[in-house]
Length: 331
Image 1 (cartoon, one colour):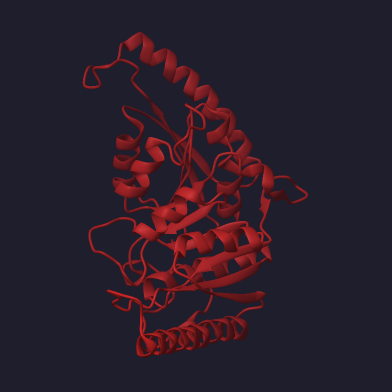
Image 2 (image 1 turned 60 degrees about the vertical axis):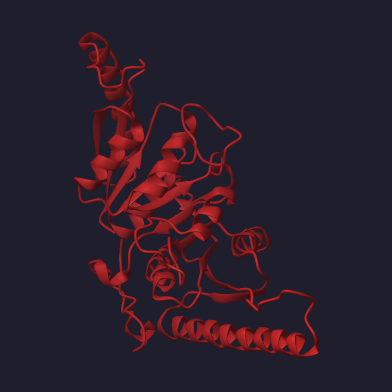
């Protein structure tokens, strides 16, 4: 991870993403770009903005961003700022596509405050319509995180990495290892066993019940062996405390949220897709359901790991399997 984009408006909600971005930037040695969009207030979005109004807004935004930059520089992080004009989601999307961005950090809500909707429109559009990895910070989640003594970075105690056996999901492991090493925190590897999928037109007879039980037992054994193998490899190559959580239930997103609550998870690192990946979609249904209901920060990774440059300095060779894509990946 080399370049982090932080999306800010003038709201206090959006400012809470800064400590998270600084923490990751310090851990990965990345630089930060702060992006602010001067949004048009009139109904004719295609009309040019009044020059005087533009200069006034730009002056205010520049002063605001200069203050933020000074705070970030005091944390020994390289930072710059950009001001652009237009509709936030569209302009942020365009900026990401025209710059070398590894991670986009934004809050679930901004200027309009928290609403009845789980995500504000800008966050929703960027999650569903951009290929950049995203760190989504739920509104008001900062208060639940402890800070280090120097008050510049956050302290994570426990990370959650959901796994479903796919190389897509496993791509999150390398990122989680980097963060866990820097934060000296625990990793929780979780798998929710999917529904067996037996066709049922009427109540199952004894043969059907036996088959369903056999499938459940098989799935449990396979998943348990899989998690144990990943845990063993991590423990043999790192000093990170690792534990596993295996759930036999149907609602994957709901069960993952239960794990977040039960195990006091501070951040979730997951792929936007898993074993049921659908090409052409930036975010799978399970990941989106989870994002909309999770109350802790979620790092959502995009694309297959074979498509990414490896900039990690850690050796992940022992985490690799001949049947899978390499786990050497970095944002």
